[in-house]
Image (cartoon, rainbow, N blue to C red; front, side, top):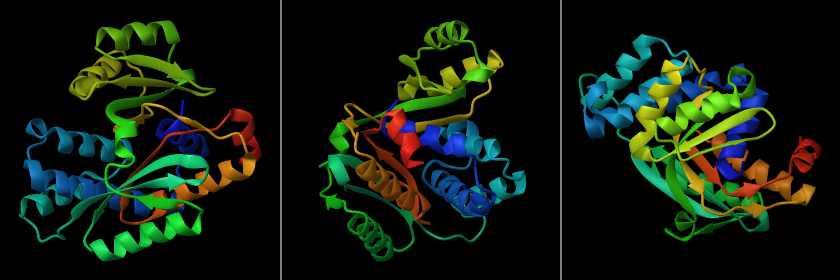
Length: 249
């Protein structure tokens, strides 16, 4: 597993810190609001909203919060207007990074993201300079203790999944965007616990990082982007060997 998928695995191993729960809820509500504004407030008819609501439920967000987020998006309640901006750049070692944001202040967010890249030894790149290295896919993470590999492989392939890979603790299921709901439904029907399910920018190729110091800089840059209030998602194509990860952690 590499890039964003490996980072997702790292975050799940660490567990969600209670101190960050408020920030996580804020980002989920922001996504729900924008999804409802752009595609309407009916969950069944809005794929982006359906996924946002599911992620919020997976994070144990109260139903009232979800409902208010939808109403802000449809205009039934007053809410902030957010703009989608995608930033592209490189971390140390030539690692490609994409940071997707939803912001009510373009200048603030651009300044913050640029500062993180500069402070952590990276550099920003122009639009399209990095995006071509990734492709949009559906990605599911499933703990190995919650599924048997052969049975899981049959379930997801029958539902249209493209690949099943694994690391020390997780299975990763990858599928085309059009098959995302079908694969999720198949996993749920098979009573497979989904640790996370999202639409992700999956790297076409990865950059191997075998120097511990560079690996630490890469992970720090990615983590600081993740922690920024306006940044919704961060994708990267790093491939850090497990022994280096353990050393860095």
